[in-house]
Image (cartoon, rainbow, N blue to C red; front, side, top):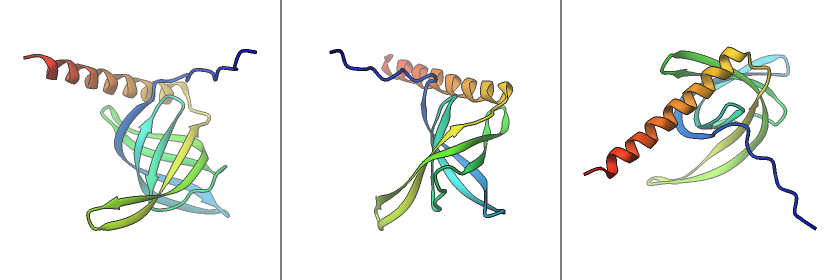
Length: 132
């Protein structure tokens, strides 16, 4: 019997380092923090922060693209505590995976264009590096 194949991703994923702010509602009280977006696609993102954001929470993440600021809304799918070993010792951080929800077409287009533009820049830099 053939194995079931997982569906291919709908969007290209880009590894990145974008500084961001996030906000969510916890027990009818606004909570916020700062994070670093470590990957992003037209369907979601992964961020690293000092605070945990629980699974299922609706969240708004704001960052700056080259064409200006953007706020992206989504739902937290996964939040995982990880250890980071540095020159000065160990520390922990939370890796949070977010699926975008209810994005208007303009915002989704901006995210997709950002990913494609950065991917093209990376490819071009690699090509130029190989040239003598």
